[in-house]
Image 1 (cartoon, each protein chain N blue to C red):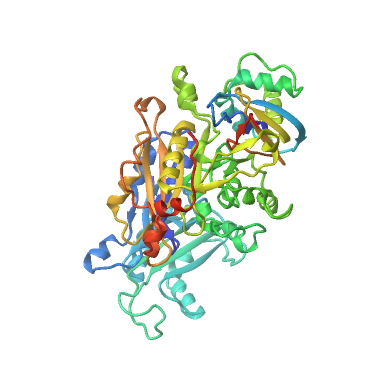
Image 2: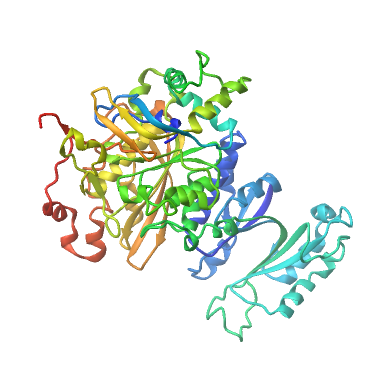
Length: 482
Length: 120
């Protein structure tokens, strides 16, 4: 067990550590290791600037965390799959200043640097990463040269392009007052870390999936970065089957497929399933990135969904074989850009059935959420994940998270993204409990009895009473299927 | 729709499983073989239905008992891969026990419950 420094990227800061934990679970499970390792890893994570924040009230985002990994290889497997990890560094030393850091490095035994001391072929380079401060080329060189007494003992050549090892000197220089770009800054770094780079995150890979270059997108296509985050929360890998019941332009499934998962998409809207043309539809998006096509694209209504219901099938069977899905990912239409809809039954003459495009009507978001849970509970395997977004306003509080609960699921994470000052959304990540733990009584109904935070969201967001779902229903008669 | 998806569909109206598949146009779309994925899927399938579908699509007779995780029967696994992941139903219908028809058009099954008025 060794101590590592995890440097996060500066975006979506609510998601960084939950993503790291999810990816650790993914790696741990794919190696068939003991589950308790996940807990001990979670307990080993602590903020590297916690001691600084108690001194002064500090609201600045923290991107530095300490974590224990068993080996460089484990740290690499985890770090290289995270979207929000910038780098993972095996720590050699850390101190409040460069001088103290150097002193510590000089006192370390030769064993610490064993890879670099091995032979002359161990080429390396040194990188200065300063957070909250820009240095000129000469300033950077000065700071690296400060450590020359350490670097000179390594027999390998310095090679900036073709190197085997990369040494990172990390400076936390976020100013306590004033602007980061102030040219007359005289403040010293708050803390310094030195170590060997073992992993870099997958932000580069994500960049190739940017929506800007995608053939077929819609008004609510999910940003590539967030899609990959969702795929990590869904524990996507090549042995998993993942379904998106609100597939739209398949932006979330693309990221799952990019990690090798097999995918199924369904949607109520026929226009997105059909696409614009042969080169602009869901399949063309998969082809664009040379990903295997989804195993199914199905038109259905989540309220009356056609998916195999294992709560009925499994009553007499072995609980280990219950469920058929590994994860459900979803971005629900919550009535701002896309309306929440359900299918309305119509009486039709039998000869029209094959070519008929059926009618839909508006439905409250809480019905969609409760159907989603019902579907998830009857289809996910043990430890399968349900990952979905819900909208909220800036009034959302920690207490509102308790709106999302279900007897068959445990909450893994609830991360908030601030879209605009008033419009926020929460990514909920839940995990299916053991099937034999399921309470036998009615599982549904938990959502109808309350007024959850996401109810009538559009009306709350725009402060327009007329956008309440009840008023929208009045406009058209709806005949719900019983 | 690949045949694997068919194994997870039930009638949304009567909630009965399985549906009856009547394909009119079938394609084979090659995809990479992944043994681990097939092994993970086997316990999730209704093996009797898989055997029946295998016969329906002329893939031949499958063993009466589903292969286990430690199977050495690579041939069956390859066959399941071809059957479940490479066989694509382009056109056809899915039929429920009560006679409801769900059409498959351009590879997309339409699983909405359209109430048919028999009297008119």
